[in-house]
Structures are given as structure tokens and as C-alpha cells.
Image (cartoon, rainbow, N blue to C red; front, side, top):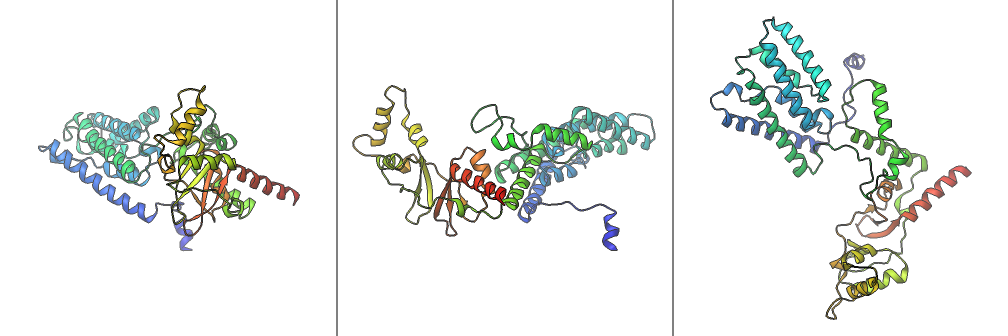
Length: 384
């Protein structure tokens, strides 16, 4: 009965930040509020009541708790609050009762945010401040520049530094690329071409006829993860260990390049995992690495140039460690194959090392292995 009563007030969010991210968001909020307050105090020591705008607190929640939301992007934050401040001061100068000024101000602020595509809910709180305390109290239209714009510029700066350098995450959120960024052509990546298209998202949002507090990029990401889960459920628990190649040709970091080149040619393979003495993967070397590091200047004598690079100069062969790629992206042998589909289709990878529970090399999965597994699963389902 009690739960039924609470349901009348809506349901809690479907998901929230992980505990670690919650503490980081709390820390960032504290630092951001402190920076904004201290810096603005130094900028305006004679006006202590104008150091902060109250709506900065609401903006902090959006910027640090839901940073990928369209409402949390720098454009929306800055444009929304500036519009709200201009409207608020303008309405405060009207000779109207406070409730009329508030109604006109909030509606006007929302209208301008609609027109400029800068929807930011806390901006309406900025509108209310001059209306409540009076235009002269906030120094008229100077209020737009200080403290509103100065507060928000500092907040956006702290948010950028926090997300980019501490969390190593993207902020502001960039739109979903319409071309393939890996292979540098205009076609979308393979999974995007076969799956959800930007036009599909746009059409669905228009059909819903409401604001969705999630970016197009995150919505695509959610769809992709859901696809992987559905694929895992549909094709059973086929894991990386079931399809990987186990007899992997490997080299050590001090293996001469000439020997590594000979192994690639003799076994007709394209990559060699580089292992240390504990069979841990420390790098990977491919045909492409040889060609890139040889600095070929023309096609006529390409073989001679490559041969000279492989054999080294002054009779001392260079080692694999000098050209290998490190660190190496790998998967665990117990991972579902659905997890490697994006890697081998969209991320430009052709070979993915597979590690066991001790983080030692257990095998390798190629695009051919994946194609064979998908074909086998599909054929077995059709036969069944």
C-alpha cells in the first residue's frame, strides 16, 4: 500500500552513478563552488551580496552529476543563464506586481531558450533573482556580467578540467560522427550502418514530442549495449575461449626484427603478440608497423628499403620492442563474443589477444574467427 502511494509521486531514476563516481561528483561540486565563490569575491570585494547567484548550485548538480545531458553542456549553461539574467532584470524594471513580473519573466526565459536551443532549467531561477530583490539591488543589467556570467564561466572551466583531466571523459559532449573516424571515409561505421541511424533517433524523439534528458550519443550507446545483451541472449553463452586460436605465434621484446619478419612471412599471418618472460602481453607488432617505421619513400625500391630496415644498420638488427604497439587492448577468455563485435567492426582492429585468469596470453581472435562463429551460430539456429 505504501509503495503504491509513493508511486503517485513518480519513480526514482532507472540508474545512477557508481559509488566512486558519486564521491568524485561530490568532490568536484565542492571545489567548483569554492572556486566560483573565492574568485568572484576577489573580483568584486565591494559587493559581497553579488558574489554568487543562487542558481549556480542547481547548475553544479547538472554539470557534475549528469554531464552528458543536453541541459549540462557549456552552450546551454552560458546562454541559458545570460538570457535568464537579461529577462529577469528587464521584468524587474516593470511596474508590475511581483507575481505578474515572475510569470512573464519565467515564460519569456523559456521562450528564448526554446528559440536559441539552449534549454537549461536553472536559468529560470536566475530570472527570478532580480524580480524578487529588485533591479537596483543587483546593479541593473550589470548583473548579467557579474555575477551571472562570471559564475558560469568559472563553473564551465572547472567542469572541463575535472571531466577531461581527472575522469578522462568527454566534456562537452560531441555529436555522434556521421562518418567512419577510423578508416577516414564518409560511410558510417559497419555497426551504425546496420543498426540505429541518427535519422531514426531524431524521428523517435520528434514522435515523443517531449524533451529527453539524454544526449544523442548516449542514447546510441545505450542502444548498442542493449543490442549486445540481446545478441548474447539470442546466441547463447558463446565466449571468446570457444572461438579463439590457441596456437599463437609470439615473439619477445628483444626478438630481432629480421626474425619477426620471417615469422610473419613463414606463417602467413599479420600480427605477432609480444610477450615477456611471464607470458604477459606487453605489445603487438604487425606488418603495418614494419611499413610505417621503414619510412618508405617510393614504390620502385620499396622491397630494398624494407629489407634494409628489417636487417638494421651497421650489422646490428633492431628489436621488436622498437616498433611494437603498446599497451595492447585485449579481452578475457570468458568474455562473450558480443563484446568484441564492436572492436573488430568499428574500432579498426583485426586481431584481439585473449588473456586467461592469470592475465597470460591464452589465444587470439581474428575477424575470420568472429565471422566463422557468427555463421555457425546462425546456421545452427536455422537448422534448429
